[in-house]
Image (cartoon, rainbow, N blue to C red; front, side):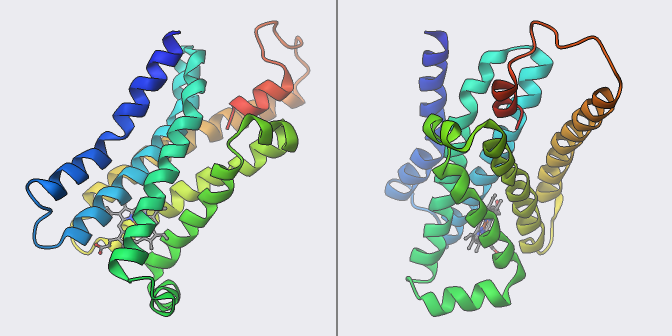
Length: 218
Ligand code: HEM
């Protein structure tokens, strides 16, 4: 019941950036360059949701609030949702679906190449976000595939650092958050490796079964 309520609250909260953009567009306007405002806002929120999805596992483990895992899929899907809006703003409002122009940009402008790669990598994650996909792929393969989120996050930060011409403080802040999240996982991974080679007392009863653990660890 509480998880359901929290999920509804987060779902509504996650729509606020879009509602704010629409409200501004219809009431006060989006300034001299509306396309830039929409591109920046949707790009920002894509990265925020990617990093939020990546923080769920550490947060869940540190606080022992295991129910948090139930929010990760929705947050990941919101990252894809804002990523799609960001991409649509670019190909529709900026490039008017001119495929030739878009391809030229992807080839010639490195920050677009990287952003495009980050977005493409999100597609299989969104497509396999269902419980059915986890069952079909198996926990281990699903977890492997979903490690692509790390690459999306890294490319997303590089995309942002490369596109900024002057003040790089904000993309660097995102980069620091990402580095902390990746370092946390690297430490866990190194610990697991070393405890796997050391003979120890078996699994504790609180440890989830392998398939459950595999899916929740991404
Ligand atoms: C097809 C994929 C993508 C394209 C074509 C694209 C294109 C762009 C463009 C044209 C800008 C504005 C550049 C400027 O004003 O000079 C931008 C900004 C941005 N993009 Fe992307 N992008 C893509 C994917 C992504 C993805 C996947 C992420 C996040 C993971 C992302 C995050 C951002 C961020 C954070 C900004 C800057 C926002 C700000 O200035 O506050 N982009 N992108």
